[in-house]
Image (cartoon, rainbow, N blue to C red; front, side, top):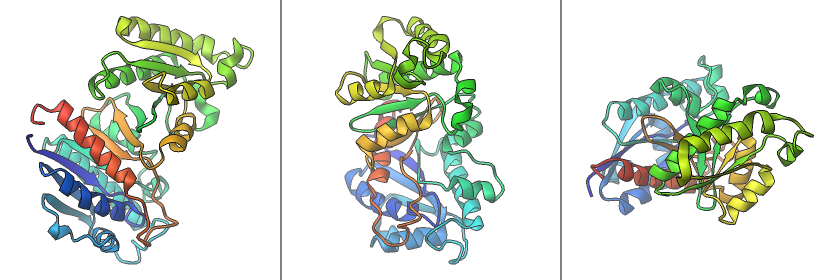
Length: 327
């Protein structure tokens, strides 16, 4: 196989990102002799994370470190993120992204970021998904959580519940369904995917008794997507979320389209926590990420599970091989 290069940002210097990255790459280098890794993060945090897991960066073939900041030991102390760490993690993310956008890497893998800390440090930050979309100049992207038991994508992401109904448009639902279906066919290799679309309200609105979003927005959007996709894709819905996820768990569907963040993530983390990967669909690049947070409560103890980072790396490699003629 031809070489693949992953650009990795380790996330918050005060969190578990540096240590799970070190642990995951220690194993990934042995599994993938044709893959190179470029790791971006704070210099001290990279050293601390590797020491926690008994990893020697210099001993890992095909791993290149790019220190993107040098914050003090106090500012990278394990636990809640400092202002300096808030700035540092965004610098690392942008540097890692720049490498992929320049064509020097095949995919971006991201560790967990403290969104509030980035915002407190001076840059409003709703999340990786929104930031990457803006940096790549893409009007609409789709967040998907892909795990061994469930794939689920989201129409809305980091939005207050009070604004959901206003932001749930026919175009947003239709585009999410289309992007999800195309990703299943192209990135995940499912030629005739089966997709179920959740309702917003309990029991998918009970024919308008518990809200009209299903009748006025979601159902017409599904029909428009069905017309655009043709007979090769099975679309079902709107269906009550509890039924949609139960059927997907049992293998009836290849993906679930959720209307809002926690509708998707509760199901994903119950079924696939530690193994699910956050994938951003609709970008001009491949981006995968862990599906967990910065782990401030266990940072610095060397006990964080690297399974999420391992899963993100493995999926990034698989997607890069599928997309690139080099792989």
